[in-house]
Image 1 (tube, one colour):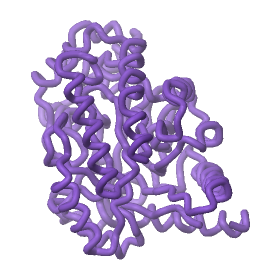
Image 2: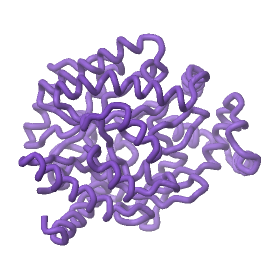
Image 3: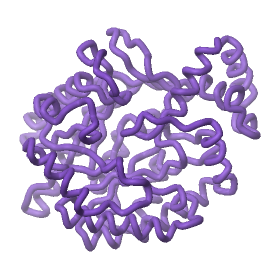
Image 4: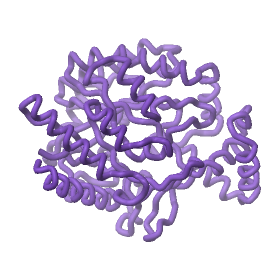
Length: 396
């Protein structure tokens, strides 16, 4: 009984090959059909084609990450019913192709955000950082979002203005490109005009409204997931606080209680991302893992060093402020509980979430930040070592 070791792969255009992933120690692949437009049904033919590529290298397509949720669904506007129906059909199609774990998120507009993707770490590898003052400087003085000043205290505004005034033109351009970087799987970025338009479309949607829209979505899709025997696993907000005045509603223990309580089903589950939850200084991750263990269907494990001021840097996997050991211990015990209850294997996919850019990958073109080969290989090896020790300790 072990976690299923996986790595994310962005498909045939990924500069990291499946053969390299195999040598990194993974047995499962986490991927998605990024070429399918958001809101469209994933055709079975395309699913099968991708699955055959994966299985030809002796992998399992372990998790879909992600089926993107159309913004109309999040806003519950426009063609949201059409897009919900398409999402349901994609769940059915995946199930018929033998894929039964789906990660998704409900973050408005931006899937993630960092203020620096090229931080030189203490060992001279390259990692990423989020600095709240730097983000505020972009929001207030570069992007110049309407009424942005209402979302920051006076001290933050003053510090952000000071930082902005210290920037040269090329630094402004680099910060802009970093914050506007697009979805994982794509190196395309938003334009400032497009981002402003998307933010404007959420002007009447606060956290309560967005939460109700998520609950509506959950009540629509989970019955289909139950019928199809598919485990849905919502990913937390990254970072777990509002950005650009947009609400975030998958950030805290209370948020998870609302989500799990919206529809009482094991299929209504969680992707436990230790880096995303961990950036939230108030979040007690070992407790959250214990409280929601029965609903956790997918583990994203990474580490951060964080401050109460909403700053964090992505660390090596076993260093930083997050108690990875306790999270893994809890989930091994949960896996044992599931096996004892069902009398059969209880698969829990785990992937090292992100990895530093290391020397052997410096010349590899087109690598999405956090998804180099050697940094993730190191992370997977370290996590596998922790698991091995825990299994000896727990006699599993």
